[in-house]
Image (cartoon, rainbow, N blue to C red; front, top):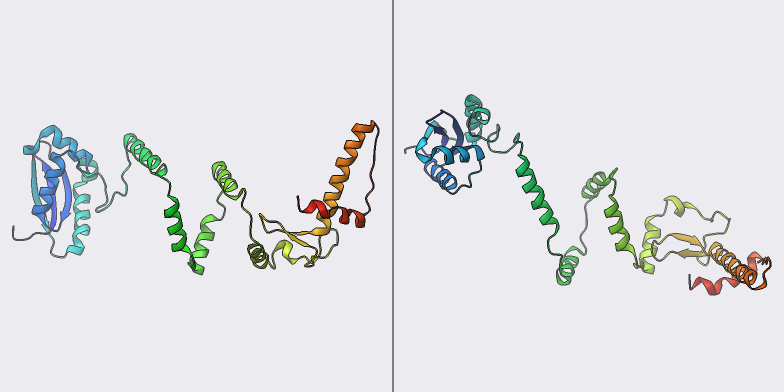
Length: 270
């Protein structure tokens, strides 16, 4: 064969239906087609079914156009697919040369793909050694501003599923932030929401001595308000116990200054 590359057809001599393709080497491509068809694993189910029905002797391989420039192969293949309309009246599964665009998978194919995805989701979890290696590889990695913007756009407006929310909650349970992490969070949120305020809603200043950072979230809170809240809770619990023991209403009044001092012992346990 003097010229190797171009567009070819595989024609069924019984009904005239064709399969259109392009090849860099006609001989190798025809051999590959025959091997796939004879082993029952050809990518075109329509051609495979016809091959099984009519047999190998019913088909002929023919060159329809020689193409010298290999970059033009798909363009010329597309022209011949359109000419023969081989995706509708032939054995091509796609109306587009070189890809599967426009192909509608069957229900069986959809079920097979779905099962494959489910199996992929149940793959073996990473070992502790693998996790450690991945952690080392990612440490110190700096994400560019463009990448950050792309991640932000992808997550905006995205609703989390109940399962995803549960997984996030489980991952955060029992996790305590270090003091350095809390300070870093505070610095990062400077100028945002609560970080802009210099006093709590009750008027107490957010000073160094009067500021408490929640271990889990790093959220800033007023120590005076926390102590007063704990004191009120302790007074309510004590009044309830006395009410049950004495069988009469009991009310305990705690001045704010005394309440703050009284709550010092409870803060460590809270």
